[in-house]
Length: 124
Image (cartoon, rainbow, N blue to C red; front, side):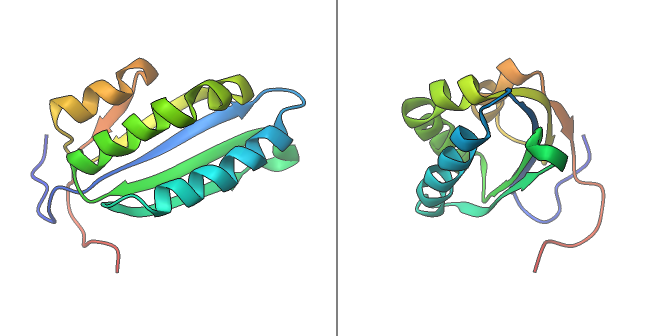
């Protein structure tokens, strides 16, 4: 994997298919999860996007380091996972950066693709 010249930041794009009739539940989850994640130390960015006819959702998440990823995924598992997975089905997870083995284990069930930093500059 290429060197991560701009630190230990970890980001990902999670794509999901919304289960039929579940968009209202997705909306409610989004509001709760944005508030919760916004209060987490090390959460640098957290944005939800929706596709046509509310059939797909994508989450773009950025964390300062692997410890912040582990903390986020612990909170997710404790507070949101059952409702999240009842409303949507993950279809693809692309992880950017070089997360620790512990951080990788938190998303392993989603069969992620890992992309290491090649070049550029951090978000401003």
